[in-house]
Image (cartoon, rainbow, N blue to C red; front, side):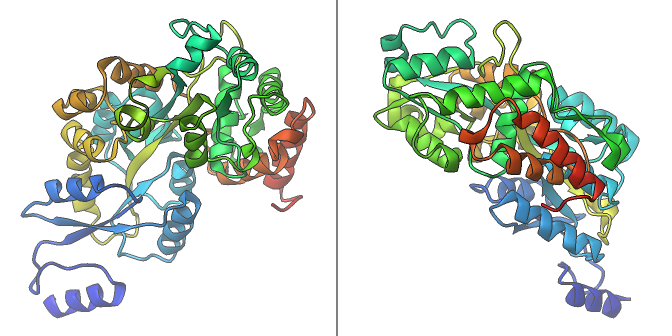
Length: 412
């Protein structure tokens, strides 16, 4: 048996820790970060199993492709995987994720923020364990808002910040390149207007496409307004998280919507006391904004030869202590309130910013949970890009194209 086990490990590139049936080595495929997942893997290695990591490509779409291809081929060398929320339903629906026992599902759901649990759920089953949760806030330059005379202690709308930036020589940083980040912005605008991109997603390709709604038109209106204004940066159509941060840190920096790590990039070291933060802007005045939700859930591969040990490891990997450890090293914030209670985080961020992150996660809007989200997102990007071409007809055009793609009548 020992010889057979060694042959299996060599042939499949799976790791074995002993020559004679010793404790298995679980391989965790992770998204690139600053060492947080490596530290958590080390902290969760035990006498029963050790955990090693393999780094996936930087681009989330390439992560999806690599994982899906290998699991579809029954590759046993993947035990655990860090999975982006947009791909969770797709992997679960395809049978790529091992079932998490019900008692563990209940515990993970109780521990997590509602937005994190929603993003981790498909067909009423929690299919990945929420690990870290990201959200966007409105970052602003204090010197700019003082000049513009806008009160950031009150909720602000997209209309207000576009007007303030336009009239005072400022540029607004957003993510509007033809990529997933643009879909994130569009989804947040629609959700903030009380709508959604699609519903009844348990019907698969027959889901109800809702983007051609009043909420969709409000989202298009905001994008149309920004692109036609003096507040639009010159690189708007190719802007991403990095370029929008550069705009914010430059001489014309005014407002920026971006993820939690901006504090580490532009806080005390770069902009010092000139960086402020507030709740994500309202799409419609008086209606609560729905900030974007991002993050990582950890799933167990259905092709793993170490499924029992990998499922057991989920509890340690996503414990509040290890969520806090990961956040300390990467500034990718915890998926649970208990994770925020870890002492190190209280030293990294001002308490009012920590409170804003948690408030934003409690009301965040995950992208449509559907096994067809990748197709939906690509269709949205095709019809809403470039942002300068967006108008009131765009939501209807995108709804038609999404339906054509899902029905097999058009190709991306």
